[in-house]
Amino acid sequence: MDTIVREMRGCSRHIGRCYWFTGLSGAGKTTLANKFCEALRERGLTCLVLDGDVLRERLNRDLGFSREDRRENVRRIAEIAHMAAEAGVIVLVAVIAPYRADRDAVRGLFDDHRFFEVYVQTDIATCVARDPKQLYRLAREGELRDMTGLHTPYEVPVMPDIRIDTSQMTVEQSVSLLLEHSQGATAAF
Amino acid sequence: MDTIVREMRGCSRHIGRCYWFTGLSGAGKTTLANKFCEALRERGLTCLVLDGDVLRERLNRDLGFSREDRRENVRRIAEIAHMAAEAGVIVLVAVIAPYRADRDAVRGLFDDHRFFEVYVQTDIATCVARDPKQLYRLAREGELRDMTGLHTPYEVPVMPDIRIDTSQMTVEQSVSLLLEHSQGATAAF
Image: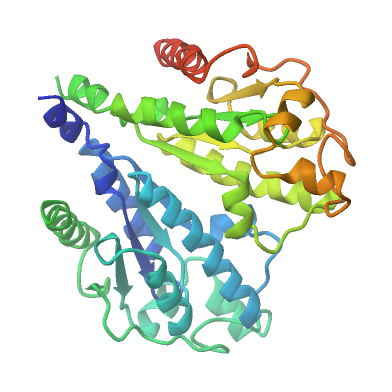
């Protein structure tokens, strides 16, 4: 009975896992992570969003956008995500992580059933049209010289666990897809 | 009803808070944090231990023991603790954090009712006698030159929220004290 109550509480450590939303700036990573988090919280689960932009203002404020600093940015966030997931938290990371090698290193930290790469596959034309942070505009005007997808590569995921194209699916549809995955992942234990 | 179930699940975000165990090496910070965490998990709560030694091997492996690096070590851990606490996790930090200014900066990140300084007040003679990591021995032999309490200062907390002297109290007594505090802190919401 005690076990059932503990399961109900949704705090069992086996629930902990990481969804890493990768994709171009403007693809919808942060929006999806936040909405998915809200939905999980409504279901009583403990959920943590690690947003790349927020982390760069605080935890990783010492880092820039060189190849080495991008690797370090991803590495630190992965370490945090791993610790929190091990503790039973569902961690949603919204970080471009443009290099395949860095993403593979992240995956290597986790057990198989605790890490899921979510490729937010929205095409660059849609991202440029949205340009929520006006970064593409700044890049076009020459104010920004390290824009992923323009000046530096974005290496597309080869075998992501989940693909979402936000130019084809609404946020609600995307969150439903994620919730379905999440329920399957919990049931698999 | 739904609210009650959610409360029961112990995952409400208002439960999130941080206990920061500060004190000399060998005082019992890690032991207390781990045992307190076990006790909280048994009660269905989501709990994360951030241990200074573990973090220095991974997240903070780029940092040494200079004044500046010690500040950065504390700063990063505080940022993580803050994020996780905001997400509803009870975060237990076991990190010496020898400088008062650094600890005050940590406290400043949190709302009042979300941060508790736990001064593990065990005297240095007891710590040296325990010497679990053989650091005092290495320091005495001249192999270690930045040992807190010997070569560099440990500024004792002036107004900690909780004091525990593990040379006077057993681990079980200490955990009871912490659990009592934790129940009070939850009830205060």
